[in-house]
Length: 87
Length: 357
Image (cartoon, rainbow over all chains, first blue to last red; front, top):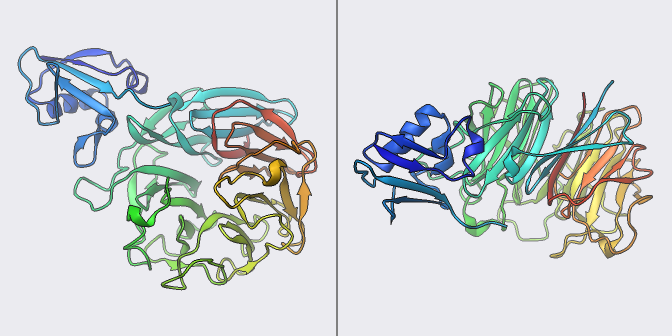
């Protein structure tokens, strides 16, 4: 199990999407796929064509910058962060 | 009692103005989680509001509400050129709805379609084979903030017949559901060199007279133009206007010769000339123009109005509405003779559309 922490900007877009959720996944991509299966459309909000993580979304696995193919360990913490930007 | 609904798409979400008498207005919003919006429409056939949005964080999606804004859903399923395509969808910028079809104009240039009320989308056309197609998606050939397909306009009587504007490049028409297209720019002016005289024209806004479909108007980067043959040819009608430049335009619902524009300074400012707010009207197909400014600020009002920023309702005495880049909405219930500010202090306004429900 990995523990995924989602940005607050994502929560109002999907019914009952929690800020923090546990998923069974081998990679970041798998974790997002599992979330997408439960909340259809969620992948589009985090992943751009390529596929690649959207330009202003940052993903960290155990405090290290991650990509879609980054491996998750048992008990990994995944932080999905909306860039501090905008105005 | 019929309600007039004015949809105001802004840089920070959708706002809804509603009125039973077009005098007293109630403001609701912001909706769509305050995502930046490019365009919002109300599909009269289904009663659904659609909004084309682009979040800096979460990408592009079409928001939809079937209860006039009380509840919302969003989708981008199918709004993609695919992982392996040479094209990348950077934004969705324009919407149109008719004949049960929702069209979404995108950049890179493409038209997506939804036939299930905005739940899923499929690519309808990228205008392949048209002159300029190989160049217009190159960022080096695009102005800042390029919108791609900045407008689609559907023929309400023929689902296979519609028009599309490629921003900064051309107006195109299809009569066979986008299987084939043809440029419709004959007679337009270009103040820059053209490699191919068929294309290379900067069409800002296309309006078709609801009275007579062969009568069209367009606000162009260089001049106002009229067509009497459904866009096959164009005649310039700029003379009498304070500037040749503007974005927004509206065609009178009951008189084919009456048409409204918002002239702007053509330089970098692109605001109303000399800070004097005004809408201009022709009632003779562009032979003469009148300034309509009763109730609008006459000095210090450097207002900008974007290409979908003005609209007109279809009441017996039509009402006009425009929204500004500085967040004001002005309305006229008497065909532009007098104006009132019905909202202020909104975020920058991208589009204003109206419907009576």
